[in-house]
Amino acid sequence: MASVSEHRALLTSTQRGSRTAKLNVNRMRLTVREALQLGALTKAAVVAGHAGLDREVRHVSVIEVPDAYHWFRGHELWLTAFYNLKDNPRGQVEMLEHMCRRESAALAVCYPRRYGPELASEVVAKADELSFPLLQLADDVAYIDVIYPVYQEIVDRQARELQYALRINDEMSALVLENKGLQDIAASLNQLVGNPVSVHDEHLGITGLATCDADDAFGANLRSLWSAARLPVPALGDASSTEGAVRETIVVLPETGEVLTVLARPIAVGHTIYGWMMVWLGGLAPHPWLRVSLVRACNVAALHLIKERAVLEAERRTQRDFLDEMLFGTVKSDPVLLARGHLVGWNLASKHIVVIAEYDMPGHECILVKEGQPEGGFAGKKGALVASAVRAANQSHVLVLRGNSAIVLVDVETGARVESARARAVELAAKIRDAIVGVGPDTVTIGIGSYQDRPSELWRSYEDARRAIDLGRRVFGAGHILPIDDLRAFELLETLAGTPRAADLIKSTLGPLQEHDRRHGTQLLQTLDAYYESRESARLTAERLFIHRNTLAYRLAKISEVLGSDPASQPHRFLLMLALALRRFM
Image 1 (cartoon, rainbow, N blue to C red):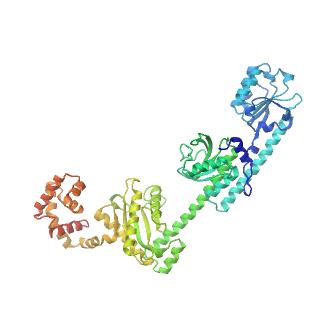
Image 2 (tube, rainbow, N blue to C red; image 1 turned 90 degrees about the horizontal axis):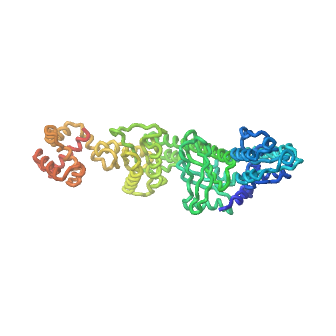
Image 3 (cartoon, rainbow, N blue to C red; image 1 turned 180 degrees about the vertical axis):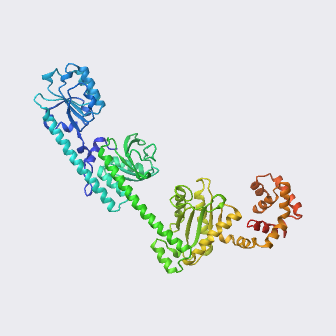
């Protein structure tokens, strides 16, 4: 990895052919080392604290009172004759400690031969210990000869900072106007600040990394770690909070153990975080303008996401409206449907079956969950899981999420047989169900409509899928995959269920069991139903009812006794199963 000095040199370079000049952090902050090249400071001698010459200078002021530390604000270059402390080395040491504690830049001692003895050895030693620059000015230097040139340089650099602020605004505004994406924004920020920039999703997973030139060892190392999925993610505490804006944290690189400083800021709209952008600083301390650049880049990214989501929502609204017209049979013309489908990105020529997945509500009631509602139905994570499962099965499937329903127009290969198309629909339904397993206690019932040759007939497949869900829940309960073609016999039974002859059949075949259960508190009717549902397997029936097989054997014998016939023999078996099926619709 590049050393600090090498990385600082990188920051000051300009990438050829790039529209964006990198931020020269060193030229924006005035250090004590640079200040020694200005005005009368060129005559100054560095007595001690050489290790702190890179401290930043933001102000110049004179100090001649012993308790001046009450007014320290940080980053000051102090000028003093130590007149009030000329015979007090201990007081001078304490003053140095206060300055260092308040992050002052340096102390320049004037006129030592005029107002007092030479600097005491303990003062020099303390300055070295604190890495705090202690300067000594020549006797012929006036304060104004130091103050004016230093302030002039500070103002010049502030003017350059203003120019850079305008450049940031221009660069980022251009990205908005050019409709650039998150990776382009990260790349532009990388070129502005000269540091690697990473883009993360809302869960802090890294989705992209923009680095400097190919010969940048620092960036190359980070990219290598990212490619190997080994780049550590900074710990941000409560990552769901947007308070504090830019966060400064550290990470430790694997193997080398090198500690890096990272600036992180959420890409947020309101109180919703859609992602994160981070600047990796290597061994450098973060300059305020790095924060400004990061904030501006994240704001532009948020604007991009708002625009992108608005376009996406408009597209989805158009698709939903078109789907309503098609599935309610409003549009009867195949050419019109094909043309309108093309406008919303759907190839309806290959869509022949409708699949509907619907969350099972208490009592199997279809309760509409408003679109955008944070909980319930296919909102949030559940909808994302279903969308992922559908895309993984076939990118050409059409998915529309609506409240507690997911509607899929199944894409079928040209020339595929009807049986093959149905099998594909059942396979897709299984993937949707499996995607939702483990996300809460809810279950879904999935209806599969009939195969239709023409787009103008897809509404029939939609109605069949809805019918399959309603019918299947009444017959089998919730949580099943229900092709309508497997429910045709139950459709016929439903039409017979309301007739007097159906009521007579139920009473004549099941009446004795119902009466016995009522008088003795037994569960013979439930046992017989479970026995048929389990394909007359004693083991499966016992497991289904949570009873011992001996208990089941006793109940089956009792059923034969009450009915006066063997429920496993024909024609009694057929009549009993028919009566049980009809009973579900009564």
